[in-house]
Length: 406
Image 1: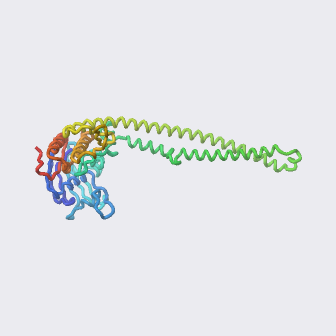
Image 2: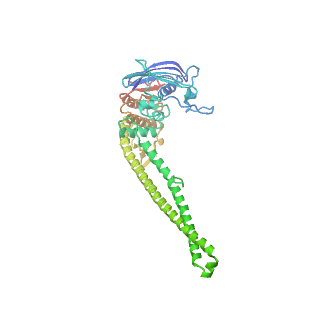
Image 3: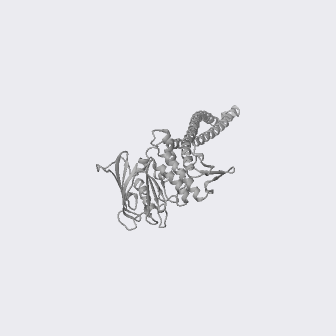
């Protein structure tokens, strides 16, 4: 997949901007204030749209809808021409004050026919990952190199191993259904089907004990007294006999209900046990799959890292954290210098890209991500960028015209 061209009608400070892009590496050199980060955000918005605006009046960098509203007024949005699956497609988006006011269209650039195969968040369908996952992998804004995973990334990685490579795996959905069934049976806080059954059974057993106590009282009454006393109090003894028989029937019925309740509770407890075993099995299977894709990612990471630094002892953990081991002590890479930390995090990002997008990959957008690197490390890192561009389109935005790629 590659972007061929774009037209920005209005987006932030950018107005009537036309841009042609090529396969492989695209170096875009522009000075401070031109709108490089705005351009990168525009590309992201064309594939994923913009989230709803946030409340309040203060500045928040996450409020993309408000931050990129045109400075000069006019229609908010533009067009993007891209090639996908041997077809040239054009997406057109214009944004309003809320998503309900946005417009979206996708057409075949050659036939001009409207395409209805895709929803407005076409990035999810094209790349198999949501906006947040895209931002944590292929879209790397300036000063936001931190390497972290998320559910969408892990789901796609697991999906690549589990099925046809679409990245649409069912692990998390299956786990959610199982855990939901577990919570329905026992939430762990006294709520759920099993605690309710236990409570009902306990109340029923208390009732049985009370009825049995009353039955014993009636039987004791019937056994007491001589013939004269029984004759003189015949009505009392007659009522006692009737109550005794009634209590026997009530107790027998309640004992049957209690036995059925215990059997029902045993079945639910067995069902809960089986659910717990299934969840445990699923998590263990997932952990094994995680080892597979993490080992693959570590291979890519090690190759990129070897290209840029002689630093040793840097590892990529299963939870996506990056560690540095020295003198037997393990530390976060935050203990490294700013430049070295950027090198490591970029290598991790590139390794993630290579792992996530082995087939169809989105354009990799790098927004002045090497500002903290000296010339030597910049040259080294650019070798990695070039290697990345051999597999797909890379758009590198920079304000350093002195750093031309040779």
